[in-house]
Image (cartoon, rainbow, N blue to C red; front, side):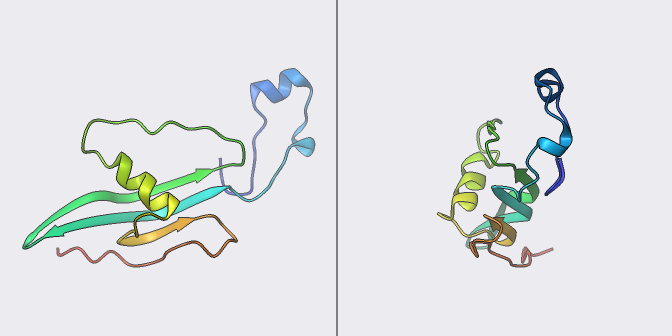
Length: 106
């Protein structure tokens, strides 16, 4: 799904709801090109790289993956407990988004 748009689902079709009757609101949560680096001395670890996510109001998701894959880091950046190293994260229209450019050494 794209931001502000909605496609009819099978459940919508079964219930008789048309696209005109569905909500087309702004997303509840959005992140774009999210990066998070951790530095310890000269060592640098990339925890998140270019993550894009849009959650619509009422949508439920599960964040799954192997150990040390960045799940907790992503959730911390999305809820504001941790500041991303780059990209934007937050609730559209609330002023809670953070925007920076990635600064990892190349």
